[in-house]
Length: 413
Image (cartoon, rainbow, N blue to C red; front, side):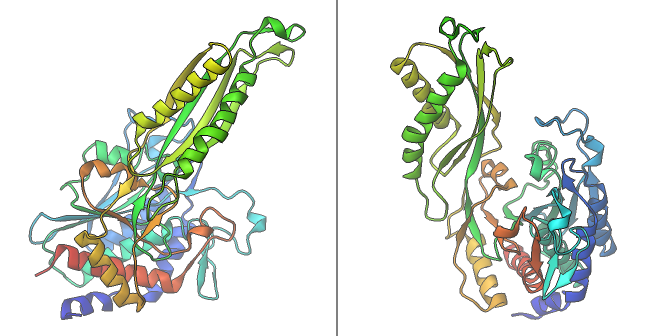
């Protein structure tokens, strides 16, 4: 390890990391409503104190979410910091989200979920793992590089981002489409709970609403109508016995198989009437090799099959959310090899690539054609759960891995 790298590591102080992590947890940002003003200010202040140029970015009124959550756009800022080097390119983007899920029952927690309490080497609180642990490590890694006076041979962007828990319409998706990631990233590290393992793949998701139409009638004379719920139940059965087994056979070396989940159903107006319309919400998670068109085609084939087995009926398919594409980064990419080497040096343990099982903002970036990885502290199993926590040891380790990876990926003079 060279002199510059040792100097950067000397700037990483456990106590400061712990105190910053606690500050992030105490700055509440649960979704709903997803108000990130307080936590964004915490990140901005830490970056600015280290002399890093950073700003708060607010989606304008024209940026719409498909979810009626009542939050105002000027209440959900993201942070974008930039550490300039001796040249503009290459560009490394560090992205991790500052919003969290809500706390359903605080009484079930062993500590106040917004206290940042410490017990046996862990910091407890909502967002400790998902995803303020990664936010903390990415920000502190960038701060360490700035304090060490490193001259990178490229540009480092650090992006504590809002709205991930609400499908990123007013966060990463908006920032990307509006052109705020400038210069365009050449490499991307998504900070998410991976237990400090390196993920090179992520499934994408497609949320679809299928509307099945029948014919209304009086409940006393159901033979005069066509019950949309009954038709929908037959369609759901086809999904279960026909489509789901086929998806189970679609695999990837680092990911769970493709899945389909009927997650919501809505039908009926009156108790004494034959329902005319039934809406089914489908959550489809898919691996590399599948796409929106192939997914819709499979659903259409099932609906046509149902019509052939029963009688013709009307139906519609509406895509509710289509955030992007699966992440599938070649393990031979220099980004992957560099980070695996860094992880081994820092942790002292063998590092192998893995896959990310949850969902992240990574799926918005494959269209850029850049290598994408996920890395961050905390066990994924505690995300969104009661007594969410992050290991202090992992926090410090992740900060070192982010800092050294940036040095080696971008180079320095």
